[in-house]
Image (cartoon, rainbow, N blue to C red):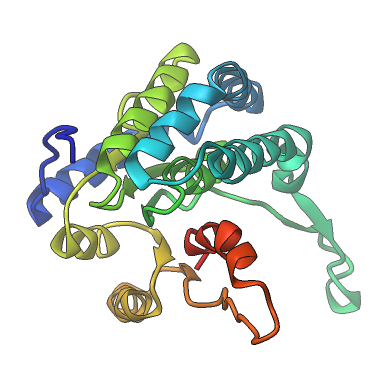
Length: 254
């Protein structure tokens, strides 16, 4: 055991203050250009590629996973998502013109995409880098702010990764507090759910049900990525010693 640092458990009032600050920043960022958003992504991508070993070491130190698993699950997946956003993100956010139908032939119709506001994300400990960056990338690129509650089991690595995001945002002149990170336990997460415009959750089905119930009070959209779907079945005819070598990998994906 090694002491890694002190991380406060934020109260509901403190969470509300953080969301309010993110909301002010989001109103400014919503008017940002795609050029500025692309620049933000490119800075992140460059940093990740150049410092991937450090990122993996931080993930490995906080979760116990191997460097190989950290590279595959943290670096490669995150870089792929950034690359996709750089290539396709602007296209999918452009207005779409639609047929107005025969009864409205004299009118024109189009669908425009507007930011939701402030997104809340409650993420698990098993892939601390990817689970933070995954909701953040899409939220910021589409003009939203985001407040992320990191797992109490991976607060040290989460706070380290948050500094990477802060530096990239500052480099492109983004408003302060556009992306924020909070630490704490269940009370902190509950407060976040009731304060934001959409909630993203990565974790267990039991907690997912509670989040969905709480989100129904304000009718905000909910995205749930729940565990328990990665069964590992060992049959009688296998070499148990061989299976033991790669069984731990599946622990991080359950």
